Length: 355
Image (cartoon, rainbow, N blue to C red):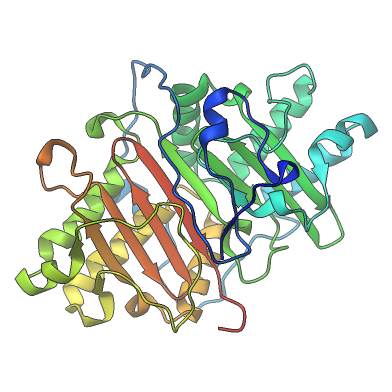
């Protein structure tokens, strides 16, 4: 659930005037706010790596398999490195970037914010600590996902040196989480401290390049639109809606929720296979343990057939009928992709309490 906090102590630390205009969302209540485009744009670097969707899907665990899910643990690569980072901090550093596990900021999401003031490139951190931070990020992503995030951070804010981290709780207590934030990025590693929640909580990714062909994540839209192309006339009427919900409105609704778009459970077997391929592709940038936990939660929430897929006419870039705003949603799964004019994506996967 969502609410907007106006209390000064609850807002994100701004790095520039544009950040002050971003909504700050805390996943605890049931209101939602619109998240406007990030202020300002940086020039696109001269290179972009775009991996084929087939390669992206390769190596991902079979969707909704019956084998036991390997959720992240305190012994996972990212969590082990986050523990080393925590242990390397001085008392003065801990006062700045460490907070209690139940702090509101742990579950806050925003497409352009800094959870703590020091950025990775500041003298606040030692050279070894900067490397540990990047090693946590590497451990929380797939190889291709890590490369994409590096390119995204280069493009959007001059590189990872301009992003920030926070640590919540204490390693070894069962309540510990590392969170990295900055322009178009909120990513976590929690060692399964947050039960029945994928990725340790809601995450955000995006890219500030407005030309679809140059955006690092446009391949996901192309993949989602393969499903739309396979729908018949009646199904398209159900799937294509005029106005998208607020991009930040991603509360988990549970099995009694009201979901927009066409019901995957009512599609043919080949159409369902296309939806399955979309889920695999959008999850592929993340480490196998997070992917398997997300799929296990999806299965507990009703599986692939519990999902709905919606496309939105608003924001159709270049009027090409490749729908740039789309949403995959079910009782335990929300993936809102807004690619107009550039990408903001909000993800929330978990089992709703008392659903």
